[in-house]
Length: 191
Image (cartoon, rainbow, N blue to C red):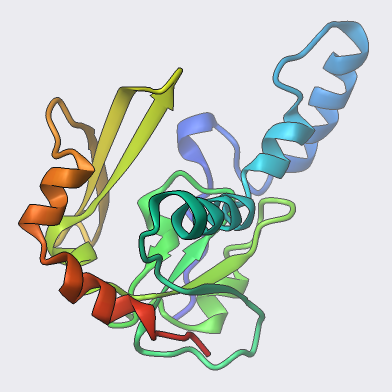
């Protein structure tokens, strides 16, 4: 089944105007100061850099387990115990579970319109589908914004909404058996 990316309609950027957008931004930069620089934004859009930083924080500061991941290359074997995530995306349409018809290299290859984007294979965690994920934004050491993203089964995509309350990490340790999570992830290797 061939399916073309739904582009970045929230930003009015589509495959047919991406080149014009990038050229227009280059011209605009010559006329005025643009911040943040669009090339910098594209560079930090890579989840790979973020994942490297989170791995370092987990191993050296919080001493917590992280799910293993790797950049997937076209033609790599797609494992059923992994979820595929595209870099340079803030959209749930680029988080593909292995039990969906989109979990194939034809779809992944047709969804590479953003310059520099890659697909990441990450070990699937069963709690993702059941509980979703929380993105926590911290400024000056304090939480200022939390987004809880959950899978919408009827729409077959991910939906994020602002969270107004959440567990602290210490409270989460009580909710989930920390030893069980550690056993699940400490000896897991992907590929």
